[in-house]
Length: 153
Image (cartoon, rainbow, N blue to C red; front, side, top):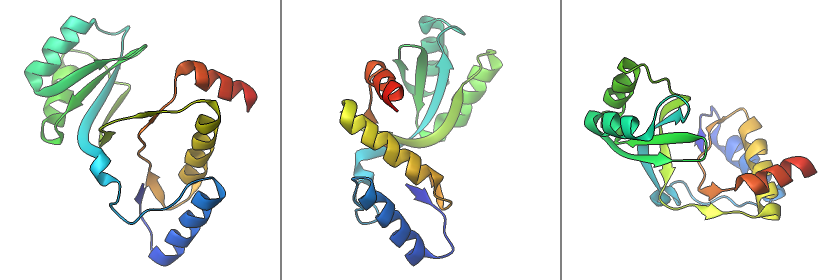
Protein backbone atom coordinates (compact mmCIF):
# COMPACT_ATOMS: atom_id res chain seq x y z
CA UNK A 1 0.00 0.00 0.00
CA UNK A 2 1.11 3.51 -0.72
CA UNK A 3 -0.48 5.90 1.74
CA UNK A 4 -0.48 9.65 2.30
CA UNK A 5 -1.82 10.83 5.63
CA UNK A 6 -1.80 13.86 7.90
CA UNK A 7 -2.41 11.58 10.89
CA UNK A 8 -0.42 8.35 10.78
CA UNK A 9 -1.94 6.85 13.95
CA UNK A 10 -5.51 7.37 12.75
CA UNK A 11 -4.77 5.94 9.31
CA UNK A 12 -2.97 2.87 10.70
CA UNK A 13 -5.87 2.17 13.07
CA UNK A 14 -8.46 2.55 10.30
CA UNK A 15 -6.54 0.35 7.87
CA UNK A 16 -5.89 -2.31 10.52
CA UNK A 17 -9.64 -2.35 11.23
CA UNK A 18 -10.50 -2.68 7.52
CA UNK A 19 -7.98 -5.49 7.10
CA UNK A 20 -9.25 -7.39 10.15
CA UNK A 21 -12.89 -7.11 9.04
CA UNK A 22 -11.96 -8.43 5.59
CA UNK A 23 -9.76 -11.43 6.48
CA UNK A 24 -6.41 -9.62 6.23
CA UNK A 25 -3.68 -8.55 8.64
CA UNK A 26 -1.28 -5.67 8.76
CA UNK A 27 2.45 -6.31 8.79
CA UNK A 28 5.11 -3.82 9.84
CA UNK A 29 6.11 -1.15 7.32
CA UNK A 30 8.32 -2.70 4.64
CA UNK A 31 7.72 -6.29 5.81
CA UNK A 32 6.63 -7.54 2.38
CA UNK A 33 8.51 -5.10 0.16
CA UNK A 34 11.14 -7.78 -0.54
CA UNK A 35 8.46 -9.61 -2.55
CA UNK A 36 8.29 -6.77 -5.10
CA UNK A 37 10.67 -5.01 -7.51
CA UNK A 38 10.22 -1.41 -8.62
CA UNK A 39 9.78 -1.57 -12.40
CA UNK A 40 8.44 0.40 -15.31
CA UNK A 41 5.32 -1.24 -16.71
CA UNK A 42 3.75 -0.46 -20.08
CA UNK A 43 0.67 -2.35 -21.21
CA UNK A 44 -0.17 -2.52 -24.92
CA UNK A 45 -3.22 -4.12 -26.53
CA UNK A 46 -2.34 -7.04 -28.81
CA UNK A 47 -4.46 -5.62 -31.62
CA UNK A 48 -2.15 -2.59 -31.96
CA UNK A 49 1.18 -4.29 -32.73
CA UNK A 50 2.59 -7.74 -33.46
CA UNK A 51 4.81 -9.45 -30.90
CA UNK A 52 8.04 -9.43 -32.94
CA UNK A 53 7.82 -5.71 -33.72
CA UNK A 54 7.10 -4.83 -30.09
CA UNK A 55 9.82 -7.13 -28.78
CA UNK A 56 12.44 -5.65 -31.10
CA UNK A 57 11.43 -2.05 -30.45
CA UNK A 58 11.11 -2.42 -26.67
CA UNK A 59 14.38 -4.31 -26.16
CA UNK A 60 16.30 -1.89 -28.39
CA UNK A 61 14.97 0.99 -26.26
CA UNK A 62 16.14 -0.64 -23.02
CA UNK A 63 13.24 -2.82 -21.85
CA UNK A 64 14.08 -5.86 -19.73
CA UNK A 65 11.25 -8.11 -20.86
CA UNK A 66 8.04 -8.35 -22.83
CA UNK A 67 5.36 -10.62 -21.40
CA UNK A 68 2.56 -11.95 -23.56
CA UNK A 69 -0.89 -12.03 -21.97
CA UNK A 70 -4.24 -13.17 -23.32
CA UNK A 71 -5.27 -9.73 -24.61
CA UNK A 72 -2.20 -7.56 -24.09
CA UNK A 73 1.56 -7.29 -23.89
CA UNK A 74 3.39 -6.08 -20.78
CA UNK A 75 6.69 -4.33 -21.34
CA UNK A 76 8.85 -4.40 -18.20
CA UNK A 77 11.66 -1.88 -17.75
CA UNK A 78 14.16 -0.75 -15.18
CA UNK A 79 12.70 2.47 -13.70
CA UNK A 80 15.67 4.40 -15.13
CA UNK A 81 14.82 3.25 -18.69
CA UNK A 82 11.06 3.72 -18.40
CA UNK A 83 10.86 7.12 -20.13
CA UNK A 84 13.15 6.03 -22.99
CA UNK A 85 11.04 2.93 -23.68
CA UNK A 86 7.80 4.91 -23.38
CA UNK A 87 9.15 7.50 -25.84
CA UNK A 88 10.29 4.81 -28.30
CA UNK A 89 6.81 3.26 -28.26
CA UNK A 90 5.19 6.67 -28.70
CA UNK A 91 7.52 7.54 -31.59
CA UNK A 92 6.45 4.27 -33.26
CA UNK A 93 2.77 5.28 -32.77
CA UNK A 94 2.19 2.42 -30.33
CA UNK A 95 -0.35 3.57 -27.74
CA UNK A 96 -0.20 2.21 -24.22
CA UNK A 97 -3.22 1.26 -22.13
CA UNK A 98 -1.15 1.77 -18.99
CA UNK A 99 2.28 3.32 -18.46
CA UNK A 100 3.65 3.66 -14.93
CA UNK A 101 6.52 2.94 -12.61
CA UNK A 102 5.13 0.50 -10.07
CA UNK A 103 5.97 -2.43 -7.83
CA UNK A 104 5.87 -5.75 -9.69
CA UNK A 105 5.64 -8.97 -7.65
CA UNK A 106 8.54 -11.42 -7.90
CA UNK A 107 6.04 -14.29 -7.70
CA UNK A 108 2.27 -14.44 -7.90
CA UNK A 109 -0.17 -16.56 -5.95
CA UNK A 110 -3.11 -18.05 -7.86
CA UNK A 111 -6.39 -17.51 -6.02
CA UNK A 112 -9.43 -19.71 -6.45
CA UNK A 113 -13.05 -18.66 -6.15
CA UNK A 114 -13.58 -18.05 -2.39
CA UNK A 115 -10.14 -16.55 -1.78
CA UNK A 116 -10.44 -14.47 -4.96
CA UNK A 117 -13.79 -13.10 -3.85
CA UNK A 118 -12.40 -12.18 -0.41
CA UNK A 119 -9.28 -10.58 -1.92
CA UNK A 120 -11.24 -8.50 -4.42
CA UNK A 121 -13.53 -7.26 -1.65
CA UNK A 122 -10.51 -6.38 0.50
CA UNK A 123 -8.82 -4.53 -2.37
CA UNK A 124 -12.03 -2.59 -3.05
CA UNK A 125 -12.44 -1.61 0.61
CA UNK A 126 -8.80 -0.51 0.89
CA UNK A 127 -8.94 1.39 -2.40
CA UNK A 128 -11.95 3.36 -1.15
CA UNK A 129 -10.00 4.66 1.88
CA UNK A 130 -9.11 8.33 1.36
CA UNK A 131 -5.47 7.95 2.48
CA UNK A 132 -4.68 4.97 0.23
CA UNK A 133 -2.97 6.24 -2.91
CA UNK A 134 -2.05 2.94 -4.54
CA UNK A 135 -2.30 -0.79 -3.87
CA UNK A 136 0.21 -3.41 -4.99
CA UNK A 137 -0.59 -7.12 -4.87
CA UNK A 138 0.96 -10.46 -5.73
CA UNK A 139 -2.19 -12.45 -6.46
CA UNK A 140 -3.42 -13.79 -9.78
CA UNK A 141 -7.01 -14.64 -10.62
CA UNK A 142 -7.83 -16.56 -13.80
CA UNK A 143 -10.41 -15.09 -16.17
CA UNK A 144 -12.64 -18.10 -15.48
CA UNK A 145 -12.61 -17.52 -11.71
CA UNK A 146 -13.05 -13.78 -12.23
CA UNK A 147 -16.19 -14.43 -14.31
CA UNK A 148 -17.60 -16.74 -11.60
CA UNK A 149 -16.92 -14.15 -8.89
CA UNK A 150 -18.50 -11.39 -11.00
CA UNK A 151 -21.58 -13.53 -11.68
CA UNK A 152 -22.05 -14.38 -7.99
CA UNK A 153 -21.61 -10.84 -6.71
